[in-house]
Each structure stands twice: as structure tokens, then as C-alpha cells.
Length: 454
Image 1 (cartoon, one colour):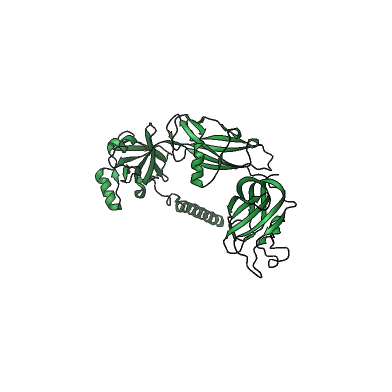
Image 2: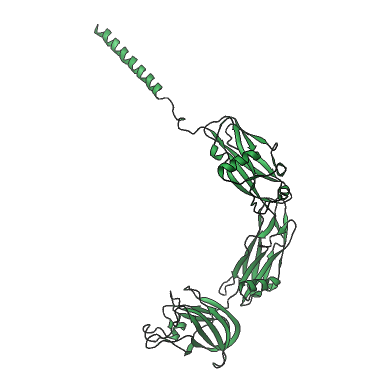
């Protein structure tokens, strides 16, 4: 009897386990899809689309993307329509806009001008509607201008789909800006410094020719150095640069070719150090001719400034033989005097007198270089973190009696040495005169160097 009872109890326990397991399966129904957004269709690039259209002679096709999102992995469709005049007017009124519909003869939807059906296959989320814009017809519109200020657009909308349409991204307004296709220099100015202390005998500068449109051709570009542009550059920039001699550079390749499928090509200018004098030069590289289209008149010249600073002259033995004002006591021992500009350390400096009297502008000091040298430029270095020295003049003399002005300067507010070109001149005595101060009447300088040939 007890054995029978035990059997019944075991069976009841087993039934309870089975029922509990069954209930747990029912209770654990898969809810992973409950929080996933339902599939929708929308235009990713919705709203106003300002599109530059280049008049290349080839049809311009704008590709409007239509996107399907969500978990639905089935085939679906969406209809993209062009808004009518009345529909566009309703949109303008509701959204305080002033769009004008481009006439039907100015554009073409793939398959027709009224509607296009986008078909999404399983797993495919992005499809396109091709819209061809007739730039010649658009430009013929009476009130169409370069900036499309009248707001002419091709208004398109997703209007039908077997999926939900995202109402916030269902409309796009394609606003064309018509442009001529140009070839141009990506940058219009660069500089090369030929370092005197460098072991390299050659230097190179790359110039990039570019287009902005889809390039379907091999476009040949002829380049030339235009001497007349040196005067143009000097007048516009207040400089006095010389044309770089032809023996000092080579340009290759010339002509250059922007190849089919590319939007840029690189031209190299190689400079020969041995054929460049100690001076400042200009190389104006000009787009002379192109095999297709024309150059952009705003970017058809690349100006390369080429400088070869003369080496610094050896200052050993140089002395100060004349100074209008200095401060031998107030700046500390061994500081404040004019001789400090020749000691090779920026920690000391010349300062105009301020203790026991005040030196007045203009201030000057004269350096005896001990022998006649040819000076091509002068390096001035300000007292560190002090902005007093501002403008001045540079003189040279053979006899310390008759001085000739060979240059002037305007100090920038930087601590590094600043090089000032002068008229290349021979002489033994170098005079620095400060005529203007940012803290008048005071002035100071840390170091003075001359560059040239002994």
C-alpha cells in the first residue's frame, strides 16, 4: 500500500513539473520585435537641396535617394511624384516659402515627368530617382539669375507606398545653380625659401590644377610664366619682387593633363639653388590654354614667391661706435647698452635711456663691421615679449660720415628674428634708426645681424 502511495505522489510531482514548464514557455513569448520601429520610407536629403549644375555639354543627372528603414525584409514600392503648381502653392502658404516650380520642359524624371515608382527588393534599403536637369532651358527662364534668387525648384515628394511614409522627410526641393565649368589652380599662392645652410641643391613646389564637375575627358592644360604679372602682384601687395630667371626653375609636366575620371592633377616646379641669387623673386605660373572649357579668371594664376636669404655675416670684432641713447644702469649690470645687440644672447638688450633722463625719438646706433661688406638684408630681434620697437630706417656708409638709406622696417610683435630686405649695397658702417615706438619715446632691441657677402 505504501508503495502505491509513493508511485501516485511521484506521478503528481512529475505532472506539476510538466505543467510548470509548459506555462513558462507560454510566459516567455518572444517580444524582441515589440520595440523596433516599423518600416518607413523617406527622402534622406529632404528639404531644400541647392545643387550646382555645370554646363559641360553633357546631360546633368541629379540622383535623389529614397530610403527604406525598419525591420521589414520584404519587397516594397514607393511612388515619387512631382508636385503640381497648386500643391507647391499650398506648401508655400503653409511653410511661409516662395518656391517657383521649374517648367516641365526644363527637367525629366526617369520614365516620365509626373511620377516614378521606386522598387525595393528584399534587403535593399536605398534606391534612386534620376532627374535630368536641362541647364540651357533653365537659363532661358526670363527671371532666372546666377543665384536663383527667384527660388526655382523641382519639387518632388514620396506620395504612395505599401510602407509608412515619414512625413517629416517626404518632400525635397531641388534648387539648381547654373555654372560654367572652369579649370583652376586649387591654391593661388605659395612660397619657397632657399636655405643657405641646407645641403640640398634643389627645391620643389607642387601646384594643383582642379575642376569641380564630373570629368569625362582628358583635359590638357598649357602653362606659362607671364612676366607682366610680376608688376600686377607687386602693385597689389606693395612688394618689389623680381621675376625668377628661367635658368632657376623647370615646370613639369607641361602641358599637364587632368585625366578622365579625375578632378585634379599635380604640376611640379623644381628650383635650382645654384641659379638663384640672394634676393626675393616671383614666379607667376599662368593657365595659358586648355583643350576643353576655360580657366577661372579668379584662379588662373599661381604666384610662387622664392626667397634666398643671404647668409649672416660673421659679427666677431664688430663694435658700436655711436649711439644716440642707451640705458647703462637702469636695466642691470651688463644690460641696456647698445653693445648688447651684438652679444649673441636675447637675454640682454639695448634700451633707450630712462634713468636720470629720457632719450627722445628718433633713436639710433651705428655698428662698425671692421671692413667693407655687401649687405643684402638685416635681421632685427626685439627684446623678448616687449613690443616697443615699431618702425625705422637702415643706413650704410663707407666712411662713417655720409650715410645712405638702404631700407626701412616695421617690426611685428613676435620674438623671433625678423629679416628685412634692403637695397644690396657695400659699406663698412651700418646704422639702425628707430623712428616710431609703440610706447614712445622708449625703444629696445635684443640682437642685430647683417646678411650678405664679405
